[in-house]
Figure (cartoon, one colour):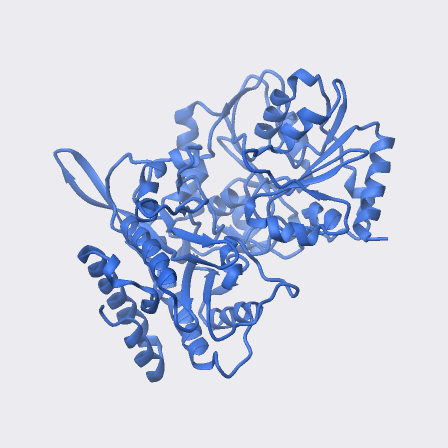
Length: 596
């Protein structure tokens, strides 16, 4: 029997024992972040699907998985033979799992949910959308722990101090800033559920999550103390002694719910509904006033300080050197060495590992050759791993975690001679990248107002891409880190005002299904440009450093302003990276960055 069929059978038996008509499983953990430890990758264990985003619904006669278009092909392959169905939307229909439940469950049925892994915001939506069905919810329903007998344990790696030479600000100063804002909001307690917020606040990093240097933890801030809920043996003695001096009290990770129940009911607590689980929310005492907003550390850490910005500038040079050495190696060896998507990702990681303060990749490298490049978040597997041949388009989206910053960059290169259409597509995408990089806008501008700058050239040619144009980036933290972004969607993040000091990606793209994908991505930092009688105006500084493949450019499609930007950018790439290259690499890069 297929092992996933067997697991599904066992799950259904447990549902029957617990008198459940449906069971919902998300791809999250109790912190509701993008990347989760293996211990919480329940969907991968249950179904075989390894994508980063999905929801599973199981009934006695149905087992379906919902994911987004990035993973349709991957999901179809990985779910084969598992008895789980990929719920791929049909044309004109984008029904999610809640709409499916509304159409298919009976009135008064019982639905099981592990409230630790659903945000209170999501639970509210489910309840609201299924209100007419009079559903009974069991939010304390963990059916997986008993079934998953070989479940990976949580990491026991210790946390470590993130030095002020990297982060630029003492933890005591950050704590005072947060408390000052709490006071201004009339807040007595601030619940932090996102580990990246806690890492930033306490100037520590961990090793609990692949790609993001996080210690899985919760925290409650009040006027006098910070209660840190983490495994005590993961905080080194020296760090614990420093915490003690600052009133940072260590408590066991699993005691967070119990501690919340003891807070005074006549006080005020600030929470973030998108990252606060239903279990934690329901532990807050009745009568306690709850203020819901983006967390204070989330907003503070989005604006990098001067030392962080200086470190980011240096880390981009290191990352650019690694990328240049990689692409030089690729070009010198592509006709003599067998290369594949997986081997290229491994080779690039080796070049980054030669750089000082490197911790590891900031996400799973996307090396998409030919049609795989048309899958925005493609991740090669041994089964899908394509061998690089003598022609086609190669897209490489990669990044590194360094003690002194986080990088994320995409380059698309031609392997062989590109077609006329490939050059046109590449150039239209490049125009979008340049247009956003050159943006000048008034203070107070929000992310969604800038999105058109990345799409204009594509739209004028009847082309588009389905994802956002830019996302926030952390500092030795998450590669995707808000609240800022640049997107056509008008959710909370894209309504965030873009401020000086914010680090954001600039990544227009075009994907031709079954053929190739093209994306040119740099990171940009917002800064103050000038103040006029009409107010303060801001601009972007492009900080990523890697040549752009000129063989893919149709120069007739670029205007003089765009040509000037490209030549200036390439001049900076050569000037900043060449001191760290061999003579052969220098000469190669000189050709790659020559003016057009």
